[in-house]
Amino acid sequence: MIFKEAVALGSKPTVKPAATLRERKQVKPRSKRKIREAWTGFMYALPALALLLLFRYWPLVFGMWISLWKWGYVPERFIGLDNYVRIFTEDLIVSDSGAGLELGAVAQAFMVTIFYAIGTIPLTLLLAFIVAYVLFHITKGKTLLRVLFFLPYITSHVAAAIVFKWIFHPSVGLANWGVRSMGGTPQQWLTDPDPILIKLITTLGGQWPAAIPTVLAGPTWALAVIILFSIWSSLGFQIIVFLSGMTQIPHDLTEAARIDGARTWNVIRHVTLPLLSPTWFLLTIVSVIGAFESFNAFYVFSGGEGGPLGSTMSLPLYIFRSFYVYGQIGYASAVSMVLFVLLLGLTWLQLRYGEKKVHYMH
View 1 (cartoon, rainbow, N blue to C red):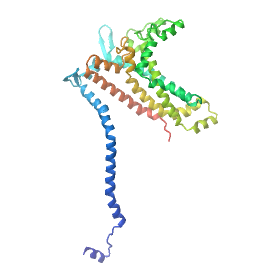
View 2 (cartoon, one colour):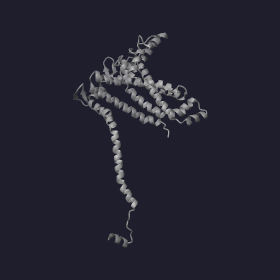
View 3 (cartoon, rainbow, N blue to C red):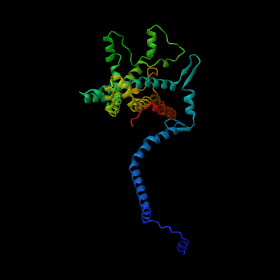
View 4 (cartoon, rainbow, N blue to C red):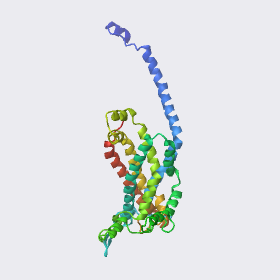
């Protein structure tokens, strides 16, 4: 009836093409297939996701919870933010009636970590780039040299640190043997508590100001040895990463620069370094995180004590001693959370401001 009236009024009935009907019929099976494929992919990823949640994110959440407790070897009572208050009011700056303001335990460990990061990151990156550039352009023995430079990275850090500790032994070590052979004075490499800067000022006839804490005078010989060991052990990894970045640089660019008369330094400055900026950016972030999380070398060289006089007490070692030696598990977790927030902030700053100077190849 309606159809007839529409025809009578001169309007044409709407007829849906058969192709449209077929497409609508195919939508439902396709959506089901996509859902099934998504669930299949999720089930394949589920074991890895479960391991990630169990061993990466659950310890982080549980550590935050522990930091809110007075927690010895067993939980005692909930104290809220008291552990954090202790960190920022008692263990950063200590007021002494005789000596005035001094750095607390956390601040000293933080300064040691800063000196370690400043001593390792720039030198390692610079040396790794130079060695990688040389290895990339030589033709003979390239593979053997790459293996030799990479070996320290895959060597056990604990075993290698013990060997380094023997090298710098004050009586039988090779370091003092070399100093004696050159007519110098043997050093107490791992037991001298005086920072290198203070020793230098004293040698020149000066005196370190008593109002400035000695922890601000730079690293001691013991920390310098740890820095040297860390550069030696991590250099191979960064060399390999730089070599990988150099292989991505189009050869035509460097060849064109040389044809135009550019010298080696100009090619490095205007071609190699800009195109390697993503590699520099990556290694800088990884190096900063690694420096603030370094533990093995500090533990082995100091015997787990952080000596002499706390000059090798890094933040991770301080957390370890608070946790395992003194049984202050809640407090150690709070310091760990502070370190986590510090690294998160440093990484964000690097991503926020450092990425602006990165040149990606398109």
